[in-house]
Amino acid sequence: MALSHRSPVKIEIDTPHGTAVAHLHQASRPLGALVLGHGAAGGFGAQDLVAATGAAGDAGLSVAQVVQPYLVAGRRSPAPAKQLDAAWTAVVEHLHDGELGGLPLVVGGRSAGARVACRTAADTGAVAVLCLAFPVHPPGRPEKTRLDELDAVDVPVLVVQGDSDPFGMPPPAPGREVVALPGNHSLKGDLDGLAAAVREWLPGVVR
Image 1 (cartoon, helix red, strand yellow):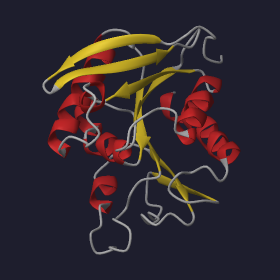
Image 2 (cartoon, helix red, strand yellow; image 1 turned 180 degrees about the vertical axis):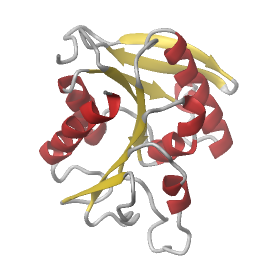
Image 3 (cartoon, helix red, strand yellow; image 1 turned 180 degrees about the horizontal axis):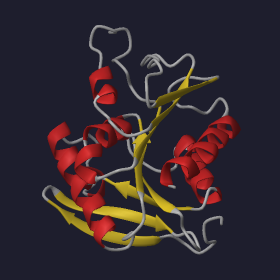
Image 4 (cartoon, one colour; image 1 turned 30 degrees about the vertical axis):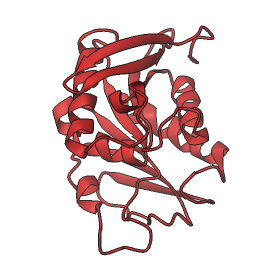
């Protein structure tokens, strides 16, 4: 059930903070869908996102890669958190009502995108959340923890984290699986391990 070899479908979606773009990689007979967000610096060329997209396709899911409005508009600096959350929620609602209608939705992303997915999981009706390189705290500032964003999610969560990530390592918790892989915040150290973790976890949460 791998993703179609055709080019992804580009979908422009109006949000309260400008136009977002979703690149939809469609599975032939999808079991569900994964909606992915990028990191603060943006771009789906990040190797962990490429690996996760492929793994989701192998698991029988369609994948929508969502580009936030600030990047679509050519700005480098991320929008404030409330704007990111509102734009993301609008995109997921559009996809849920349209191109991904009827499918159980897993939301997620890398780094800042993972934070957005966690904060909005309840509002988007997600059945699970996938976090790649969740930034638990700013480097060297463990007192500035963001664990509350992870702890607030009440659906299954998979966190894939580099074991030397300067942004910290979240602890496992009920409903939250943490897979530690060799490497840092880029998660380039073991892309096969990342893909395997995602591929094995996804079918169980969309059934």
